[in-house]
Image 1 (tube, rainbow, N blue to C red):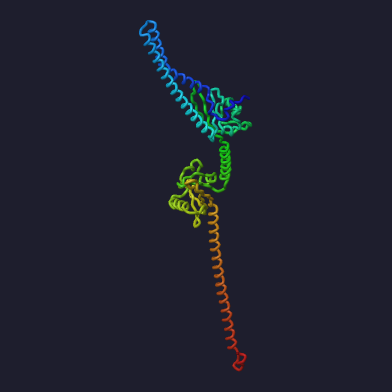
Image 2: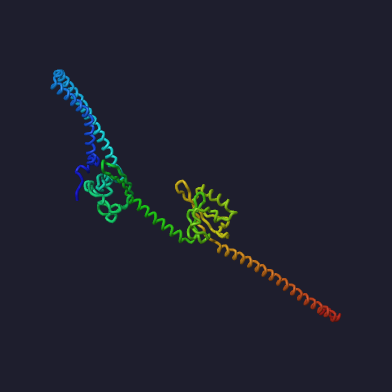
Length: 393
């Protein structure tokens, strides 16, 4: 396996791509040509004039002196121009080095991996974060094809999975940009390892799935509403209790499930509960709470409410239980007690009446017997002779 340039692992921005060097060379040649063209033209014109004067004998000495002076002036101006150009070039080169150093520092200190490739998808830039994430040393990947970092099954499509040096795959988020460098294009990809986020999302999804399973298997209806008392959670038991599909209930006002005569007071009670410090309590401690099915039938329920803060908002969760059977049983028990009380009262009245009748009959019978006895005594007195008073007594 071929490695990248030896100095590439020290600074990713020191060695410029070949096209950049060629463009710099072409730019320097163009500037020199612009500077030297008029100088060369002046030197050429002076030389032509001097040669013509020499050949034709026109002020030969004067023309030679003038040509020499002009040549010296041209050389002096040329030297000054070249010196200025050299200084400008050095300043530009220093500024370019400073820019490259700053860019290199930014790229190296980036928390996210940064990878640049050419049109052949060979790696040109591989920062420190990329080394850490991919577990490849920079020298081992510079100049190598980008496929080296991709799982084999995704190399044609460049999917959003990348491979560690040890062959372990991991998910990423990526953004790509392109720019032209002379005649070729370079592509830069900024990557972010989202392994932890995907793992957290997976755990959250499993937790929500378990919670959803618990809620849907609960025997009691469970409804969660927001601060505006709109339904945000409606479990299967609530669907069965209120006769309302979950799709219709979600987002609907809680008033759907409260009889109209109770809606105003119920909203005030929930708001007051939210302003308090109690996190949960039983509803309807003094009376049975009444619910409303979607078909308009009212039914009694037991309810408990709790609140939880979620950011700047609150959620209220109500656990409901249909107590229609219990209320019917309590009503039947009450009627049975009333009937038993009436039966006991009737039995008591019957006993009293029987006692009174027996007493009357006993009184009448004793009265008759006493009357008969008095009659017998009177008869005995009447029949007793006067000379036997003792017997009469």
